[in-house]
Image 1: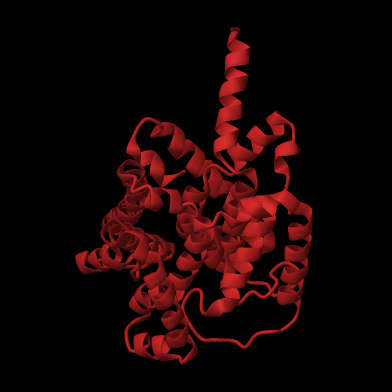
Image 2: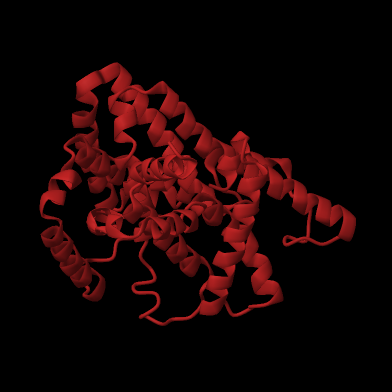
Length: 348
């Protein structure tokens, strides 16, 4: 067989292992998060319902939908890979930030905080994924790590019963949210602790919802009549995003069932969308553009401070694109440098 044919077959196998629509959704969500963190304008057509948190909810939905095969098969190898991919950025990024800022202050008497960062601040960030100096987005990794281990251990020891138990607990979680008990309890702690730990109760039902849907393989059932389900999902998503059909609920990251519904609809649209009909070269370009979501997600939070200070004090919409591109470039370079090491997880 010729080398070109072998390469084509290999590329097709790579594409088949990744759902193009979900990769595009992850890229879209990542850019939305940059908009929320960086953009200071108030254009409702650019930032529809800026105050909501459906980006994080949808990321959780994606993560736990695809966690199901690992848990159901008690796959220790894939569990190890998932934990590594989460733990490496969770640990390494705060340490890098701590070292660089302290070196800057010692050498130039200047850093973003105008002081030395303490070891206790570093410890806090390593415990809960968030601290006064660190990468605020790592609370997301904190929640993913907690729930991944919880799901795996529970599944291992409780076998077929754990999902039913967790579904009941997710209902309890909503009661705690809508009664404001979760928000009121964690408000007594500082903001970093309340966001990381308080959000656990809010994101737990989303994880259970996605995991439950994966257990019945519902989206592959929808594939049999994909255009109908895409149409209905788009219609209901339009209604939800354009009309105030829910009551605002105070919380930390993904409060209430509203975010669960949006995550489901978005996932449904992008999962079912027939991107596979695109030319293979276009598909590979898309895969390259969507490959570094983790690096962009983590790095933009660090880079944005310096872009604002030097070039874009007002946080413009164009600045969001610049921030995304710079974060992508750093992620691409870092991924290539550490391509054959586990540190590649910092970027892709």
